[in-house]
Length: 379
Ligand SMILES: [Zn+2]
Image (tube, rainbow, N blue to C red; front, side):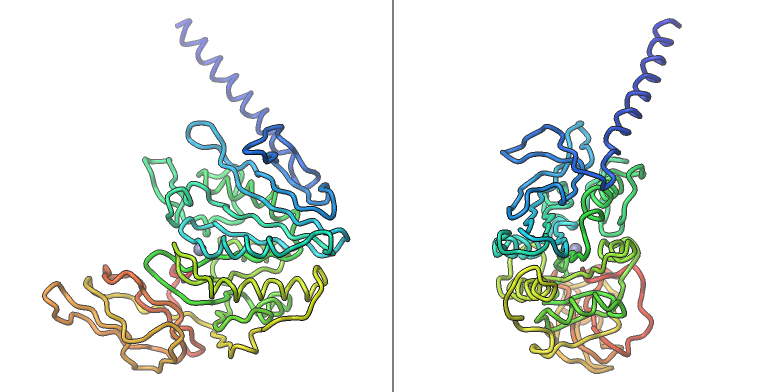
């Protein structure tokens, strides 16, 4: 009995120490920057950040300490802060919430390279690789070790929960509470479409919010889905915290699309100019590119398994009843034909040329779409 009693005491002490440690970490509530004392590849590590603490007129490259890994290390998130010489708006740019989205990360990198803090009034913070374990394997979802490995869509977790039931939920809570929310007056959460489902350039946001509408209108981007989207996405969590935000979709997953990236760089620089963070004339806007704004993104779902061939392309105008896609079995026999239930524009197309039943084959961006099926979202 004695060894068992000792081990129980040790277990109880471990709980006490773990609790004490978590209180130390929880000090970062936006009231100040906490440096852990660690330096990784020349970058200082913070577990909480207040950009007000950083030296003005300079760029700062930091690692933010996220949730722990299964072996007791931490996942770190790369943070770049361009702290203007003069005070002003604080804009946050995020990417990498999904791990297979590369053009969104490159968009934010290019924007940060263009900024000269000595000439800025305000602060721009970039948080580039929010879901590190998903990025390590170029996949959308966070590999959670709760029951073997299950895959968690981190863009259904926001604003997260520091005491949540999964590491992804806790990571979201830590990042949101100690890094994003305390340092943002406005925020843009950059995504791309997902592996197997390709879009062009789309902005997703709730245009009933004046600051969101203003930002979206400053982007020379062809398509807009005017919607708050779903609970748990990062830009909606920002909005609920009082921080106007929306979600650009920068083309296809897994690749860099230089032409589409440039549209979002230009739009973001326009936002900075509009708010006086940088100087210069406003570039092209939504009005200059013939923007199409849809209130719905109607999904056409596969009813069969089989090989997929589209008869339309991204951005095409479509009408109710127009044939969009055919599907064949292995013999080459047509097993399904899909027609549009809405007038609008093609907003996304399945890029994997086979499909199981239930997958999205086409999204139609539309203003007369039938009621939208929940749980599908072209991010
Ligand atoms: Zn995404």
